[in-house]
Length: 236
Ligand SMILES: [Fe+2]
Image 1 (cartoon, protein in one colour):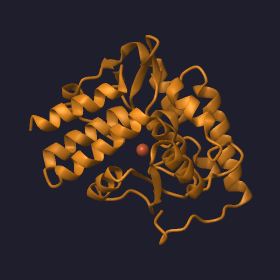
Image 2 (image 1 turned 45 degrees about the horizontal axis):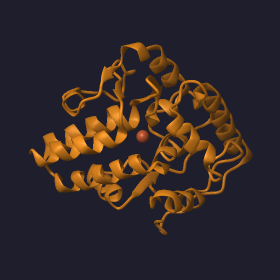
Image 3 (image 1 turned 30 degrees about the horizontal axis):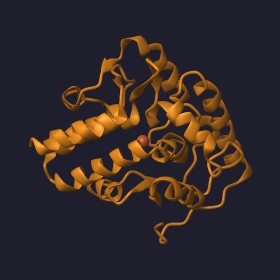
């Protein structure tokens, strides 16, 4: 934990916003979210609907399970710093929580996105291993603009907006989907129209952060993503 940044205490309204977001999203994901994600979320005692979680407690739970930890950051951070943290099994979270009138739309990720969306998958050993390797490769390719862009596309279409196949059925997985009511409904409506994940496919597909997604990829095996990422890296 970065001792220089502290998590604030929150008021009743903020805790209430958190609980509303959590409950609403957990209900919506019941039949749409990947079991891999939902089981991890439900197993966590530090990340519940009761109140805004304490970053330190979530970090402890993650560390015990997969050796990951959390760093508090003020907002989006430079990509090189982000890669370096991932390489050390550190994920970043902001600590601000949206206002009650912002339940459905945010310009920048808040703590609900950063934790509800991103933390449960890090409880999974395969995904945790992928994220570390992704960070290491990002560090190794620092300053190579085109390569970094390709890695960002992989992150976008897998970590933020990926679907994973479970028992032959595509289930929502990425943090950008899981933490957003509108995105879950939008993505779910397109689930019969997913593109099959390939490293080449995601790395050559542009994305925009300002418009609703039109392309989603379906990953059939997370450990396979690490193998193809390594293969890509070794072939550069
Ligand atoms: Fe995110």
